[in-house]
Length: 161
Image (tube, rainbow, N blue to C red):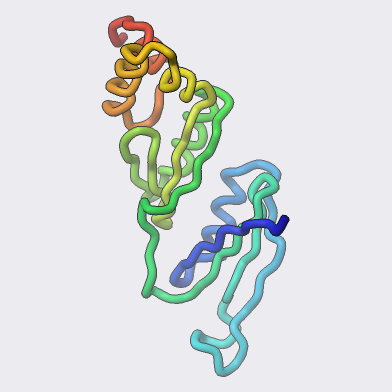
């Protein structure tokens, strides 16, 4: 089966973005950099693409120009083991010009959308008890960063702390 490799279109920041993502995700590395040749649509020698790997997932960043920007129609989901991981990724990815959104969504300083999702969140929404799932959903809709303990308390009908 062929691999699917997300390609991220930047104006001029692909190398900076790759370095940022490598600082956020463990076991990550740059795989290669290509530069624009003479007579290309961008300045000769400018970085054209950066191929990088984030904990085993390959990506390509391309410096294609300002005509396209990121929006929430595409996002990357980070499945976090626990609240500590949620807090870490939330803090790192929303820093330095990033913005926090609702329900576990944020944008990093490059405008790329991320969903920071704790393991176990699906349990409260896929419960056989529709009232329990409704309470969890109502609690999540009030959150920015997801608080797993609060979701479970809400699902269980325990008032917010």
